[in-house]
Length: 236
View: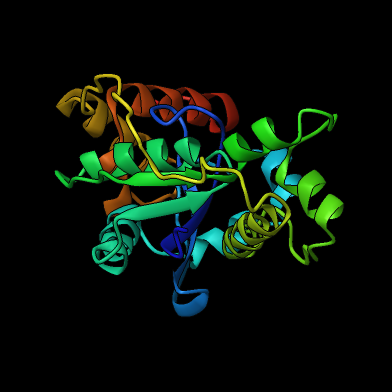
């Protein structure tokens, strides 16, 4: 029985690891069912947070403004996770893909095996209409105090794993599987885009910050379009 793992959950601006960004990472180390360490951080993003994400998570733009920059967040998370080889989470391939793409932006590597409570639940509970983390927590009587906040969901995934093990002690496939994600190629922001974006921000009384250096070509294009739409073009 796998009892040494890193329970992990993230919150993001959307569903695409290349187009969207991580806004929160939550992780808890477990050794023999004992909590051995916890990691939690909010992450600044360049664009305003979609209202639907605030509605879902309770995370606001104001909260993110006090968060870490992406490079620091990813680097510190990888340090925290370096002595763990197995992740645990609900649909963990989603979380893995986002962190892997974010790590690659800074020349960092992230590879792990994982225990996926969603995959286990699909096999063990085919009768359930929903196998979301919230639905399964309700089914097993697991209290979910802050749904869609990263650390809380990581802890709930851990408790769900234990509940599944207790209910199905003879199930022989509670095994960690390799995770694989091949990121789509991303082109960095061009020098021309960087200059125009800097000029546009200054024109509207805003500042070009260090976090913007991690923008891809498509990221920069979307941000420029959004600024022009909401603030207006550069005046000659």
